[in-house]
Image (cartoon, rainbow, N blue to C red):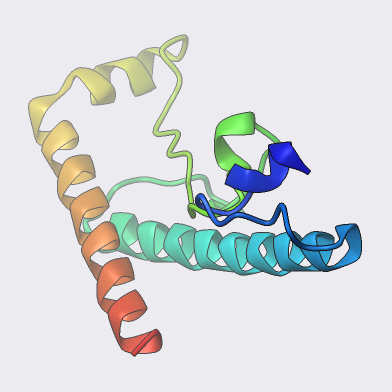
Length: 121
């Protein structure tokens, strides 16, 4: 029970039964995963709008990395190419391409927080 004190953004679940704490954590994780998926979709849309090349099929994927599994913070991993691929490496080194990516990421984040503000008010 002591380890549950920080399970959900610092909310103390120590005084809850195991069943109630488990349900609260599950609900929070579900909402966070949904928010992360929405954020990822907005990122994909913003990257496409900026003309950044994406994977031809299913540019929005998921992975089991620990950094993507926070129970209370939506997160995305943006993979824009492979340094082992000469074409990708050249694009990633191009300042114009870097600016397109940065602009799209900023736009996606801005759109997500605008959506979040409206949806939570």
